[in-house]
Amino acid sequence: MNRLFQASVINNEKLVKDHYLLTLHPLEKIKKPKPGNFFMVAVNKGLDPLLRRPISIHRWLDGDFQLLYRVAGKGTSILSRNKPGDILEILGPLGRGFPLNIKSENIILVAGGLGIAPIFALAESLAGKNLSLFYGARTKTEVLCTRELNTIGVDPVISTDDGSLGGKDNIVNVLKRHVTRNPSLVTDHVLYACGPGPMLKALSMFAIKYKLKGHIALEQNMACGLGTCLGCVVKTSKGYKRVCKEGPVFSIEEIVW
Ligand SMILES: Cc1cc2nc3c(=O)[nH]c(=O)nc-3n(C[C@H](O)[C@H](O)[C@H](O)COP(=O)(O)OP(=O)(O)OC[C@H]3O[C@@H](n4cnc5c(N)ncnc54)[C@H](O)[C@@H]3O)c2cc1C
Ligand code: FES
Image 1 (spheres, helix red, strand yellow):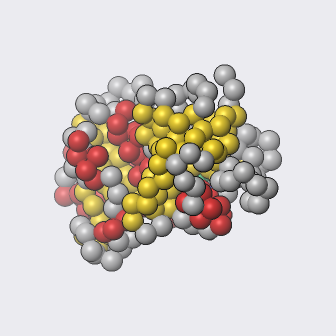
Image 2 (cartoon, rainbow, N blue to C red):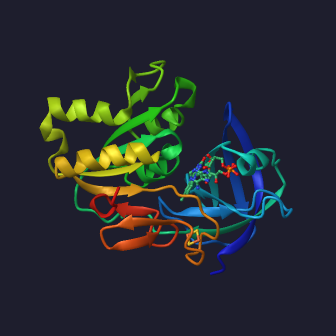
């Protein structure tokens, strides 16, 4: 199946300042993405910017799909100006997603900021299992998808950097406190996470200490998204690996921080 395709914009809804939900209709049949897979999106038809931007699958809607993104710089700013009917050229789905075929019924999910985009996709795929979501954001307006999470039976523990919603702390500390109070919270649990690098590092140290197995989705600047430019490598216990090809999802103990 061709991985380069065109998709028309159905909607590009501004949710809150700098945060958008983009709904796309592929003009040909594409492979169904797994949670943790991503697309390389050409943000407009021109040559500037030249490089596509990596964005995770957020929701699969029977052939149409949604991306949840934050305006971080030039590329995503241009993306936010696309209107219904505009056509985008997209490569994907790419990368290795979260493993879904897991025996454990007890899952801890951790999302930091826009890490909720793939973590929501994962929660939807794992609905029916015992899911505990720890979700940290900068401020309450940036806490997204709570209604949709509730509809799949997930009631997140929330913290914000400014304390405007939930505890005023980073979400890894919140999880640590939960586990210190109740160590059985992590027995027979699997951990999945996506968020900023420092959060994933702190979380990985914690998971290793508590012998908690699981997977994290990394973000890295990407040029090709296809494994050829080597611009996205990270150090792992088995040598350098490409986030776009062998990742973005890695097992927790694999990454050398
Ligand atoms: C596998 C993967 C999945 C991603 N999924 C999402 C998603 O679902 N939603 C979302 O909002 N963002 C996601 N990102 C991050 C997104 O790709 C960047 O925010 C985007 O490429 C920035 O492009 P820009 O032109 O707007 O900003 P630029 O002008 O290129 O950069 C602005 C700032 O963003 C930083 N940045 C640039 N590229 C990345 C990157 N790849 N990762 C982290 N920081 C970056 C730069 O260092 C700079 O500080 C993902 C990144 C990866 C690698
Ligand atoms: S982005 Fe080119 S190898 Fe990963």
